[in-house]
Image (cartoon, rainbow over all chains, first blue to last red; front, top):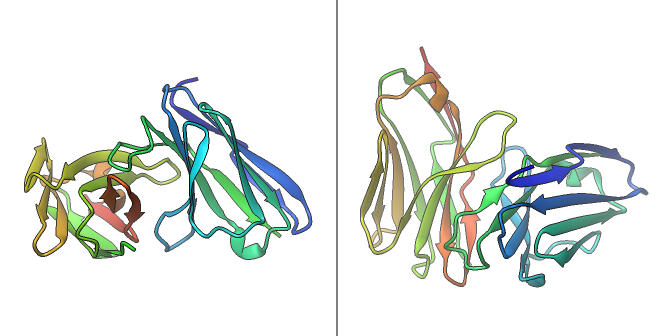
Length: 114
Length: 111
C-alpha cells in the first residue's frame, strides 16, 4: 500500500457510540493532519501532529480525540457525536510540520451520525 | 487569522476554452499558495503551488498568478478538457501559518 490510507472508508454511528478512524502514511513524512470536509464548506483543519507531537488544535470539540502513536499512524477517536458531525474526514501528511509543504491526502472516511 | 475567499463557486466552460478561478487572502504573512483538485469521490491532490517570491508559475496548461500587494492569486487552465471537471480548492498559509482553504469551485467542462 502506498501513499496515505484511511480506514474505514464509510462509517455509520449513533450518537452514543464510540468509534475510531485510522490513518496510515507510507511516505516517510513527519507531519500528519486531520481535516473535516462538509458539503458546501471549505476544508477545515482539525489537528496537526509534527513528530508525534500535537502542534495544532483548531478549536475542535472534545468529542473528537486525536492520537498519534508514531509518525506513520494517526487516529481520530469519536464519542457522543452529533448529527452535524456527519462529514468526510480526511487525513493528510507532509514532509514536516511547516505549512509550506505539499500535503498528501488520504481517500477519506465518510462519516454519518444518526 | 487568515481568511480565504474563492470565486466563483461554480464555473461551466466549453471544452477548449479557458477557465479562471480567483482567491483573495487576508494575512500578509502568508507565503505559500497551493491549488488542489478533487475529482468526484476522490481525494484532493496538489496540482500547482506558488510561493510569495514569484509572481507567476506555469505547468503545461495550468498557471497560477500571485499579486501580493492586492493579496489575490488566480488559477488559469487553458485548452480545457473533460478530465479537468472537478472541484478546485485554493489555500493560503506557509511557514508558521496554517493552511486555510477556500470554499472550492466546481468546474464543469461541457463537450
